[in-house]
Length: 156
Image (tube, rainbow, N blue to C red; front, side, top):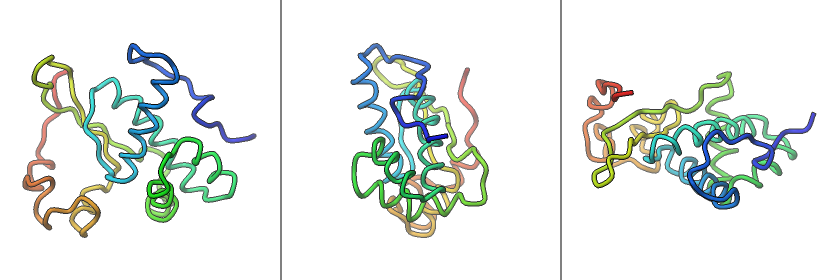
């Protein structure tokens, strides 16, 4: 069985846009998720991004030439592609699914759209260790790490 790329993936929500635009949005968001390991977006886009982010990690875990080729069809930048196979794939080598986490947050000001963070599991450890988004060892985006551990789930 050959691995399925982005074109064969079923989409749950349409984001009120054409298929090519929707795929472009998701591909750009996957790139950002791979590079920064955390993305803030609307709840509907976050749910779709979580599905695609998990699928890309499976390619990163496989590491074969075929997986690299299929992942190249989803991931746009070389930086994100290299990080997928060199950092993120090996990090989740012992984990079977559930690579991403969806955290609801306060609604967006202006249109009151529900917002959420999509992040890779273990993202906090990467930031503490001095990863790409590290501000300091005890802060994440300038906020204390304790805020993220005590955060409550938003309204449903």
